[in-house]
Length: 338
Image 1 (spheres, rainbow, N blue to C red):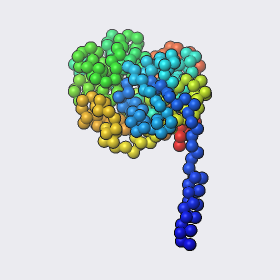
Image 2 (cartoon, helix red, strand yellow):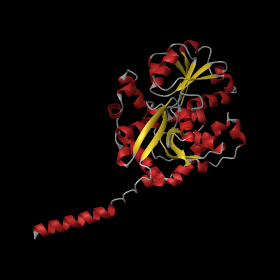
Image 3 (cartoon, rainbow, N blue to C red):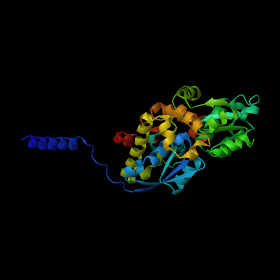
Image 4 (spheres, helix red, strand yellow):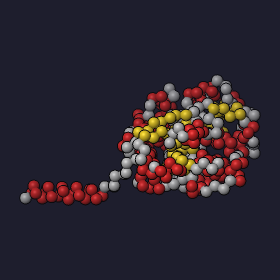
């Protein structure tokens, strides 16, 4: 009798578990996906590396090929040109491309503030005291037209200077960026961690603007400002909703993992090449960047408006364009990911 009750109880428990378990997601329409990113080792894109290293894409039935470009603008070009299906990049691109009549849409927020830092070469700190002083100077960015470039454009315009008067030079997002500053090839730099932390440790730069913290972001933009997102062409989303859901679910798993992971967990997960030759420095950079990652995966309306306001400061095309911010981001996939 006891054995029979045990078996019956186990069967009932199993049935209850089946009722409570979420329905299995439909198979992706396109299992093989090409993804573009501009500077994968940057902490800005850490959720991508976590999804890759922890096998979250495979769990969702995806075979993701990651193409690492020199900067976000090049990833965007690859998406528009059709050589990648999805991009991990800056939210601002969704606004700018709508103005150009090429609709793309973000499907999950990865970073809730930019984490971009503007620094000037230490020996020029007495001459370049404000973003306005960058006119006529050589400024290193990950790539011209990328979010690091937009960051400097906004700061210069806000300070009353013309961003077109600065010379923007693509220096990448790793040791090449560090070398460009140390060798005197540029006079200022807009980049992210671990590049900025490395330059700070080497006493090579003086910081002019820092969006690695919520307080710093609010000081610069007056509010929240979304950073890295996952975006795709709108027609791809409509044609492949199951594929997009799988992508978003994998990235949501990354955000959830990062929410409880220690900096040591992160360091143990990423490739050693990300350390820029200094594991302890990378560990400190991870700890300092922890609060930059999105807690919900959803861009708040004021964040979208803040990004739009920033772009209008220096982009004349957006000054007269009619932008529907509601079409730049959809939360339906994040909500479904749970």
